[in-house]
Length: 472
Image (cartoon, rainbow, N blue to C red; front, top):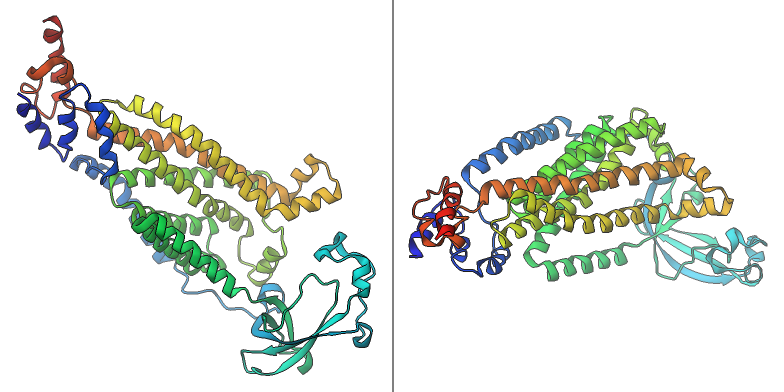
């Protein structure tokens, strides 16, 4: 008598027949959670058409935007020789010897710079010898040439023999003054750290971790080949960030999580939250009169490319900075609702939404704190300067340097918070519309409910069979 119930359910719209069979006994719901560990169940053809009707035009618009705004490389400019805009060459410390500071006319400072920067005290700075570093140029037309540089004992950066360095190159300077050490070569430790990161991701995530690394590489390519050069060409930074961020979102989510309805719901939730972040950022950046020109780097960019909208760059940074965390929130919430439906196939969208929000509230607390701490960590040197100046909290918050970070943090956090109920609601509606039970009365009504119920309206017919069963 169980087989008539299984046959109509098993052949309808790709529904998993195991869910229907499990409802034939009193413990069926306790076993249904096992379906969440396999592939995502296919959705009905009608629902696929609805999702495609929403996402295909959006995907086409992103492709058109990429084609129309594609910059074809960063625009050229005359080198200013200032900061990051100076020419550089590779070099290394060929020789390092201790010498008397007086013999090389280098008098160390008698005061402790910045309260003891580098760990040197006033006494040790005056008594320690200077270092005479012979720097060899290892790239460019002057490869093999050397010059000397004096390192005073109170300098924070110290050299070791054989260490790679980055040299600033000034071609118009006199021959003996064309090169100077501007930084050290960190290629080896950074490459090793990146290798450890990639290995850890692949070992733990396996195939999913590998696809995540591929998506990360594609995201970095879009950022460096499209977003940054397009902004330098003078295109609207907000439009560039929306198009580029949307491309990153589509590629990363579908590549990592598969082309299915569950990922599509996460895409819709992320997209709506990104638009909310863009709207709030635009309003409050203008209202707070933030210019975005708060550092030497932004000032240099504005001088080199006067056509760039610096305020728009600030807004674009808010959108791109929130994208990664948004992906995490929306994917997690969508997966949670799908798992809840697998565990309780009879749950309607209201029950799924309530259970999903209980999970989402814990997620909100951790994610918002993570975002705030990330911004605070990036701005920590700035906060230390204000602490040294003993400025009041309100005065510090009102300064443009800090207000910029406050707006960036709060706008991103509001978008994250809004993404939880929005994505949870979308997922609950989609999964309930596609996978609601068709034999709701089979547990209480016995075998008589299913034979008289057609798959299209089995839930309604099942309700009608409960009265005679209960009366018996």
